Amino acid sequence: MTPPLISLCIIVKDEAHQIEKCLQSVLFVIDEIIVVDTGSTDGTQEICRQYGAKVIEMPWENSFAKARNCGLKHAHGEWILWMDADEELHADDQNALRQTVISCKGNALFLKVIHYLGTRKEEASPHRSFRWAQIRLFRNKKGFRFVNDIHETLKWPDGADLKQPIPQLPVQIHHYGYMDDAISHKQKVQRNIELLLREQEKPDHDPWCEYHLANELYRAGQWEQAFSLVNIAIEGFITKKELPPSLLYKLKYEILFRHGSMRGAWPGIECAIRLYPNYVDLHFYKGVFMMEHGMYEEAISVFEHCLKLGEEEWEHLSLRGMGSFYSFYYLGLCMERLGKKAEAQVYQQFSVGLIQENRQKPALTTANEG
Image (spheres, one colour):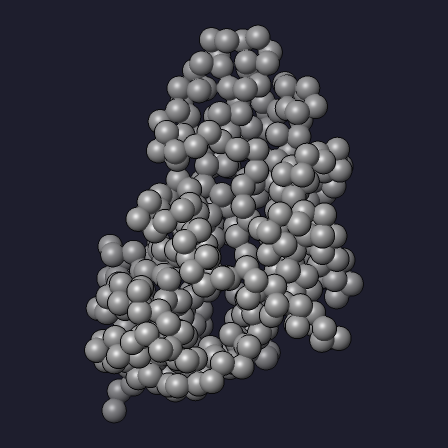
């Protein structure tokens, strides 16, 4: 028999309030649904079975990676699409996803993931979100697997050629798990901190552990501890002779800005930008640093460069607006401080429409997605 083309693999626990929308969003794309349930008591399993899912019951072992890998063992599709219950595939992208997979010769594909911020899912706006391309499709039975108990990471097969470019599909996944109501519903922060502290006790733990722990402490307002940990994470990657991922530098300088310790951002942020010259968020933070130190002309040049970089780069985790309305807004502030009221008004007019839709005045810093 011909194997199914795409298997959806998903792990759940008490997701009855949202799993149906997730499954509906991919129903005409996938051929098989594999659900690993780690102890639902709210009817989640029954909903999944109504959509033809194969439900594997697995006791929770404090490891997201183990649960993910359990699903892979039961999947028969040529390709694996992995998602979470608080995610939905963009409605207009279903055909593009399937047609690309049919003709793809590679082993993995990037999808565009939009992580929404704000209070409630009903109020989700693309203007209040982080965007980042992630590998969400990969070939089955090739040796891909997940590692790390929390904030699990997809590990490539041993011996894989990592120099080959990975295509990025114009396909979007909407993620609502970092909105306020979702975090409080799942008590995510405390759960994540407990799991990460347990992971950190392992002598061979990955530097990603310190990064994710820093991110959770940052969300909890423990900025000094978070700053210390993100620096340890950076040092950990350097010790392993690996380039620290761009995420780490974003969190490091965001903490400094939020804490009001901008002098500590210089000259390190220049080094980070040399490593990641197309990362618009780092350039934006540099511009704010200069503006707050009275270097208005230099700040204007940086914000104009942010506008040139724009919003279409998905390689790095980026806050929506860094290459558009936030930069326009801060250009207006610089012009205002230089006494150029007419120019300030022009820039503010460019930004005001999106700012109103964003429902808030652009802040100096924003929450980092973990």
